[in-house]
Image (cartoon, rainbow, N blue to C red; front, side):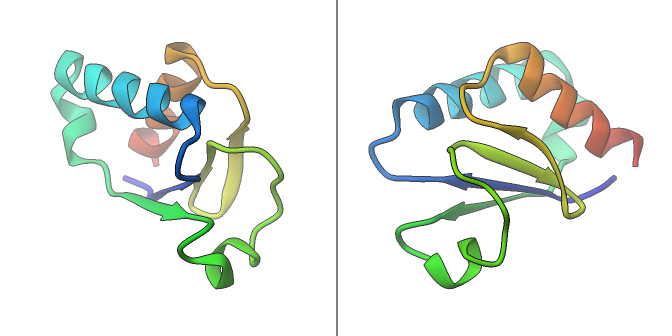
Length: 87
């Protein structure tokens, strides 16, 4: 499995929704529970966030490749999870 890096920001309503959908997907498919997801709050860790090319949160990278940026949906998050699982 590949590592997922997720960029968020405190107070972001789309990030909150993404976390809820991520939990739902993990409950739906136990394989997703084994995924390594590194969550970075860009306000808390700007030195890491500045190393990546994105503008909107949440943003998902799988092994350094940006797969989603901006307003999420359950389908888009599942696509990120699937990309990480298929490694």
